[in-house]
Each structure stands twice: as structure tokens, then as C-alpha cells.
Image (cartoon, rainbow, N blue to C red; front, side, top):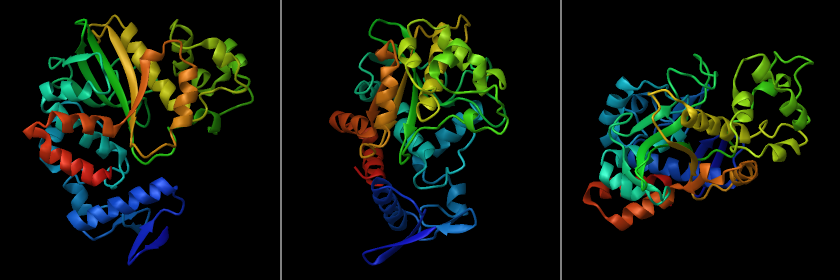
Length: 340
């Protein structure tokens, strides 16, 4: 922990923060102190000002309080795990819920707003999922990637079912980032279970023999199987040029979510009737740290339309333009909390 003194105020924060993270954390703490509580919360045995005290966590802060009943109802029918830091002011899970769930309570308005980031969206498919959405979505119970168990697995932070302008039923998987500087990286190449038989370089060798990948041969995850057997998804020649597996770093999370989307689109199961499935990343407009991984990832795609990225202010600005009474209070609250 490090104590920052800014003006007349002190802030107990993690030791290493980027300039963006520091500015966002200070704003979130100031907002918390003005609107919720001046009390700090415990994390790893120390008090941190961006963490909420236990009682406020029980009330589901920092989730927008008017949507808490809807959130709990959704969770009853579509159970999901709270992230470890859900009671943190900078929680990405809470920020994702705060961005999308108030919209999805009004499907007609949601379609108008979401079209700013998904131009082909015509209407929300309210007969799918939970009135058209699911939080922490995965292909339960099929587990087509083979990576879901009690402790791990590929999830999309938010999923939206919709009809496009051609009338096709589509699914939109969304990964939300707030203050993170990178996407989740591969744990396989750092695993203690690795042997001399597991090698991540060169990438061409892994393409030719996926058993070199710890996740493939040891864990039985189907990442490489799906990659190699989904023509037109990835440019395999671009991957082959890489010195090491390109999915060791931040592109790993992007890759896995894209494979989840591709598997659902290819599925013949009536559980997954979606003709087109897309994957997007939404992030804070002042967080530029994720751009290198996203740009490098886009180069590896054969079909760039399957992946997109946008900033959360795109949706907020569209909602402001629509100026619907149902959204005004939430808009002011959201924009005030997340500082843009």
C-alpha cells in the first residue's frame, strides 16, 4: 500500500498505478466519500480507500442501487460468480453491470443506444436468455471450449441477443474493462505442471503440433482445435510468422472469447440458434493501455467484422441524444461516477 497526498486529502492506494489509474482511483474515492461513505475497506489485511466496507458490499455497492433487485433476480435464474473485487470502486464487473443492465431494462431504448456500437442491431431479442441478456455468459452446459470448471473458464462479461437489420438472430459477447492495463494473459506457459514437452515457441511449431501447448495436451482445452478447424476466423499465416505463440500475453483473453463466439455460431444445438455471433471490448474512454493488444489481435483475424472495440462514452453520448426520461437519472449517476 502507498499513501498519496493530493491537495489536502490522503489516499491509501496500491503501490504501482499508471497516471490514468491514479486519476481514476482518486476520482472514485472522492465520489465514494461524497456519496457513500468516508470509511475505507479491507483488502489483503490492509485498509484501502477504493475498497468499500463490508456493510456497503452487502448492499451491492458500487452497483447502481435501482437495478439491484433486477440483478438479484437475474442471478437467481442465471447464477454467476461475483468477481473477487466486486466491492471495489474500480470493479470492472460492477462497471459493466452499471453500463448495460439499466439499458436492458428498457429493450426499445436499449436497441437505440446500443446501435451506436453495433450498427447492425435492429431490436433486442427479448425471447432469448433473460429478456435478451445474460451477465457472465458462457455456453452452459455445453462447455465447447472444454475449459469450464469450478475455478476457471472463459466467460463474456455481458451477452446481448438481438435481431439484425436482415432479421437474423445474433449474439453479441462483450468484455468490459475499466482500469485494467492489460487483458488476462495465458497461465499455461507459467504453470508448474509444464514439462519439457510443452513449448510456446516458435508459433509455427505450435500450429503444426498443438500438443506443445500445455492447455491443449495437459488440460484438454480445445482452443487450438477450434482455431485450426474454424476456416476464415484467424489468419493462420500471420500466426505462423510469430516468434512465439501470440496468445501468451494479453491477446489470450481476446482469443478465448473469440473462440467462444465462433463455437456458438457453428453449433447445431437448438440451445444456440444464433446465426451470427460477434465479440467486442468496451473500455473507459481514458484508458489507452489496452490498444496495443487489441491492434495486434486484429491483425490475426481473417474476418475483422467479428471483433470490435468501443469506449463506454459512445453509449452514454447516444443515450444523452435520445434524452429518454427513463434514463436521465442513471445517466447523471453513471457519468458522475466514472468521470467522463
